[in-house]
Image 1 (tube, rainbow, N blue to C red):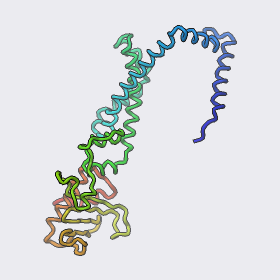
Image 2: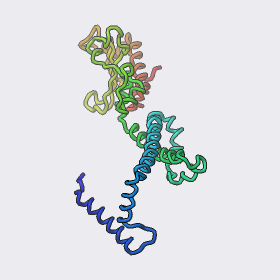
Image 3: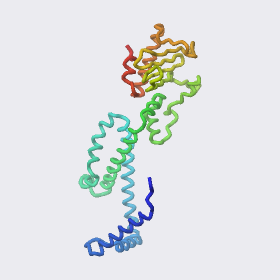
Image 4: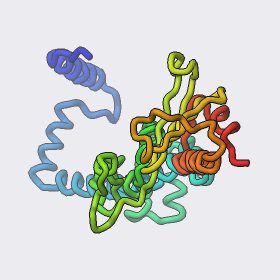
Length: 289
């Protein structure tokens, strides 16, 4: 994006002041000119009144904004993360968004008086409505694949929330790496990794077995690969056949193992809320009987 030369900004300010002076020079009643305003501002600064009034106004704005943002962040996260929360909260947010904050002022004065409370409330409402929409939009724009991956690795909602907010999650809330597991060890010898399976998917592969979708599960002992829309698949005993030379998919003696691994795939999909291409076609032939 091209930056505007500062001279254009200065010229715009100069033209505005000139137009202001020209209007007041023609004798518009009740409108002071630039010189009168500057003179009065200097008097207020010398007396300290201007700084006192500015401090009071800034305090109201800061209090209203901080309160509005503090409420908007958790509410926006809830709306973006949980459909139920969005259904309950969104009607009220949309209703008050249609009402200009200035229109709330008479109602605020009638119900809260003429003190500081109604002033801060109006600023709070304006800040909350703009901030909650921004937070909600940011949450729903997060790549769902990344969220599903975090959940599969054991991350809880709290850890994901903190990550989205740019805050380091406590150690006990983090998902654990799979690298030690894949290398044959456990993340912590004193606390073995409870995960028993690794899942993977591949979509739009028109070369490998002519399928559009495949799903895989790998455990210490077994590896199962299923090709969607075909009766084909692969099942390997990783202890007896680490080189994956003997496919046991069609061996009736291993039907129970195959069924158990398929059920794990379905549970993983439900837990991760994964909806990739071919979801319906993938689960229907695999559903437990």
